[in-house]
Length: 170
Image 1: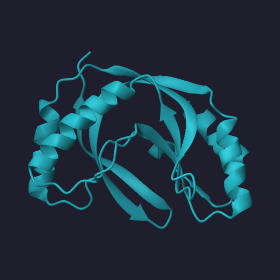
Image 2 (image 1 turned 135 degrees about the vertical axis):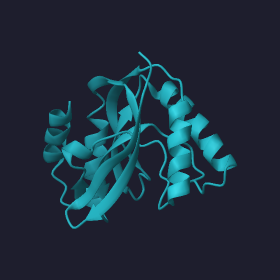
Image 3 (image 1 turned 45 degrees about the horizontal axis):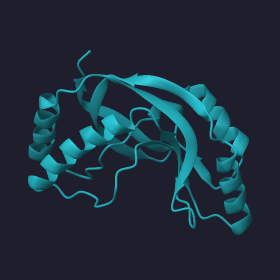
Image 4 (image 1 turned 120 degrees about the vertical axis):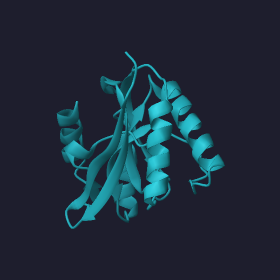
């Protein structure tokens, strides 16, 4: 599936896109920002207590956040989105109740494909037309783990490192 996604970005051919590297494609649940060791330990403990079974994720269609001024191009998630929202809600509610500063916007299960720099009207319209013509199913996989990742920003882009991985039940 990842190879098809890379080909899709090449097909789009919009210079203002900064594609996510193939090895960095993932489903983001929460962005925690810069947190100290105590909070990292808390999140590890919270993840270790989660008892979900693995579930199928079907990737289907493209979308953007903020269509008037798109800043993120993403792959949509159809099957598996209810499970992702359930895990998200459990994590979000616990972390919020324990003093974590979290974004207050609805969770949209997705896989970020590219960050978008400023687009002129022609490029924006091309992007939106491209999205409309790519509603197909791109593939599926099983969500078998939840990972706490650290993002290290480099000149070439972010490098992700797993800090903690929770295996889901079979």
